[in-house]
Amino acid sequence: MAPQARIGLIVTVIGFFAGVWLFLAPFIVEYQKVGQDWIDATKNDLWTGGALIAISVLTLILFGAFALRDAASAAEQRRTSEEAEN
Amino acid sequence: MTKYVIGATGALLGALAGVWLMLAPFALAYQGSGADWADPTYVDFWTGLPLLVVSLVGSILYISGLVEELRRRGIVRRPYAAPAEQPQAQGSPQANASNQDNMEQVLLPLVTAMLKDMQERDRERDGARQQSTDDVQQPQHTGEEGSVRR
Image (cartoon, rainbow over all chains, first blue to last red; front, side, top):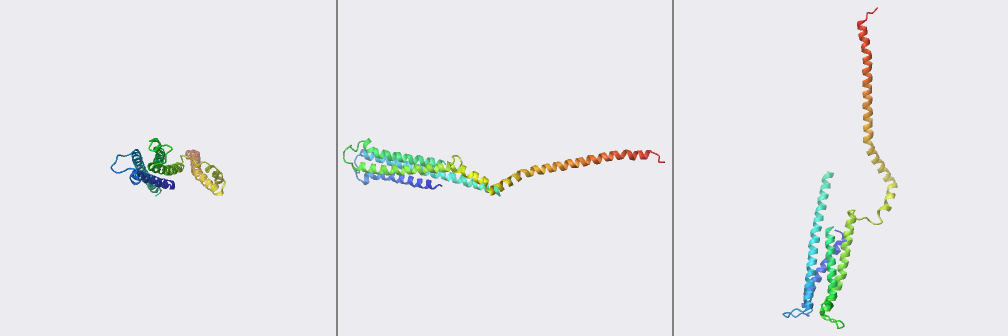
């Protein structure tokens, strides 16, 4: 895997934690009282945080799946070339 | 290659989310313009700005990884690297030696086939010459048998 992709993955993980923060922020910062109707800011933060979490998790899962597929095909190619040499 | 496209798409969506977070307090009007910023505005703006920056950096990294992969597969060329190196490599003694070896390998079967062909022709010619001398000698023998020696 290229070093840029590793740092890119770290960035995606940071996006995931930003989503978690947005999801919890209204209650941690206490601009949303527990048990009261949700204000506009809370709704916005929950929806945006949820979307960020979903995007980050999907990106991580799909990136991992395609990276595994690439690694498997590279290993297969190496094996066939070694067999052809022998 | 697909993994980089997915990563870049995710990072770009993250950047868009960052932009939205910075604008949302004003777009949804829970922050009055001109008034002091409320807590939700601080949270959204100062989460959105770093998210935008980090996601842009991430998308640039994913895209550079994609470009590198495309170069490695030969789909995209490096802009200035290859053409300057080739003429030097051709002029070097090692390159000349390897070219000679290649030439010999190409010519060797051709020369072998020509030699074989020449040998076969020589053999055929010798065989034909031998046969003609036999034909000439045979009537002399028959003549001798039928003739009366004096």
